[in-house]
Length: 265
Length: 255
Image 1: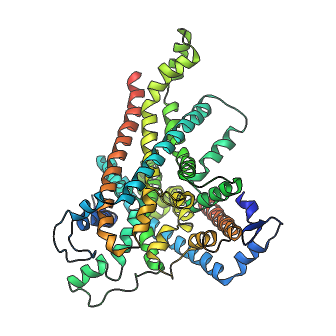
Image 2: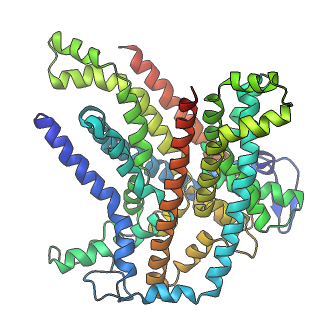
Image 3: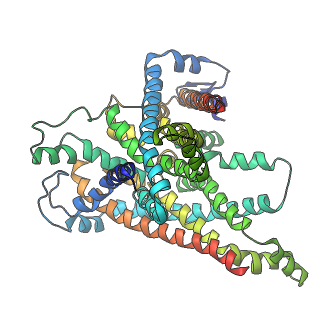
């Protein structure tokens, strides 16, 4: 490593510290006993975490969020699996167009997705409730699910499918007993990623929710009360831990999906 | 649907469905919308510029000096971004505020005697927060394009007498331009429409077009105008992106 290499390394480490700094504040201040988020630190407490236990609205929002995240990740994974299955095996007119169309939410600003969905729902006269949020999140997660499932299906050896059909399995039996187990890690990865994305999503939920709030919308409403800041920090610490665990799991399944394909050959 | 709506008008509670361009005329002539559009573009372009500028050396370092720790470095970069976007932006509010973490820390160390105000509830604060928030989206595409560069080209240019600086500008930079263009678009497009960050750290001087769209939708109850603003911002973003890509193609053809 030359002089420029050393210089670059110093830059890289500094940059990394800059990237980590805000997230590190969460655990620091969630255990700090002062109500004001500022230095110097005043003392150690776990009181903010205890306060979380007694907030009814928080529990309600958490329940709503879990319902939304679970249903939208399941819907998106089912639809995504079907879409990538058909696009990886069959050719049909308008395939490229419809795929591009489904992937569009990836590159649109979220506020545009939220606003247009809201307009459509209002024009159709549908009520705004948790299910409209589920609809919005399904739309948002589907592109990710398709991308994950595409790679799972593309790694799948077509001869395995043909072998099973030759050995007398019905197409449905083949799908259930051969294809599904092979792409199973991909499905798990898509479910977990979708769950995490939906749990975090704010703008679409903010626009589409009726009276029931999801967790991010609840956190947003907390920001207005300075008194609640340390509790919010405590809640944030817990959320970071949960999403770290979920995403590590998702990454683990994705790696296994890639590995299981190669080990078969 | 949104496209249609943008040509209608809102008469208190009912929608008037006669075709009109008034929403667009209002969106483009009212000074407040012009200001918001130009501020959104200014913030978003500045953020894109700084993020790419900071991300490039990082990606360069990982690609050329990362050795067998490349995966680890990439992993380290993405970890902080697994946390909620909302929370990260909220943390910037806590950090940059008048009695915030940064000011109180510097006061505590007696490095400053009064809280810094130039990073407080204005567009600078929005720029700092967004530059932080979108970093991995710039590092990853640039890293991928740097990885794709055939290392024998570098040897060739060195053999032909290029110094390190000349080599960087004549070989590495042009070859990694696709990654830079990709990174710029990935950051530019969503940041124009960001709602959370300006609302949290922007104060009144840092509000952007998305905040106005939301206000028109809910408080002002003028959905058609909000739709017109959305469509306009979409068109402006698409236009700038296309110009940017074409400009780059033309520039790259010289090599």
